[in-house]
Length: 301
Image 1 (cartoon, helix red, strand yellow):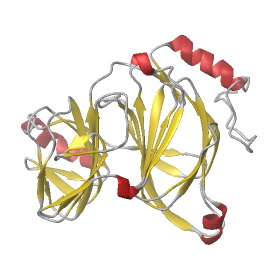
Image 2 (spheres, one colour):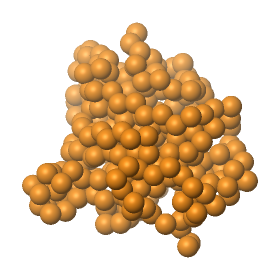
Image 3 (tube, one colour):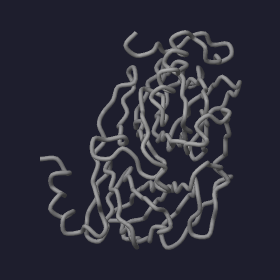
């Protein structure tokens, strides 16, 4: 029996707090495994978030690392947030940026961008432990064809609130009187919360949709116990988390911006626009990552 099966009767009793439980599914990205939380068969989006992957934790011995070759995106913005390790980002706008724990990489694809994600050669030589979260946010319909953009924010640029055994970093949006400097196109909430055992915290209630993902530890929501690697989509209303042990929890949410088509790395309201993106990538019309002629071929071709 999976822990999802074990929790379903409790979920029925606590419908005022938890709407749905989602277990991630394993995916292999060329020798590097991730846990895909969204989209799932049960729920496609939470607020603007249309994609959530947990990367690792993975231990790379010397001589090994991640090697995600240049690939395209349209109609979305990606957010990379690491707990451990480092990833080297390169994109078709010319940005080269190491991503380190606690920092935020915000890449807005808009009408189209290409990027790669690799291990820096110096870290590949020594080996590293890597663990983090990558999310995609669908852009509002009027912003889907905006100009591509890239912004990076250091960990010390993000507000962190510490209170009664809970440290909350506001990755995106506003919470507990603090606002993140990370700009977005839709109302968005994204928090990283580290809870000491037996601590409690009330989640911000202003987001139209909310979900929590337990990265580590165990938390309770109105006596509903959530283990690590579980997402709980929450109902509206006051929600209090109680840490059954030292835990790390991500909260995502915001406004529902409507349904989207998603095919490979392309997100859009129009299937025809996605077909055009397929054609453009197949024929290498997208801008290239400078000094990198490698690429991931279109799936199925």
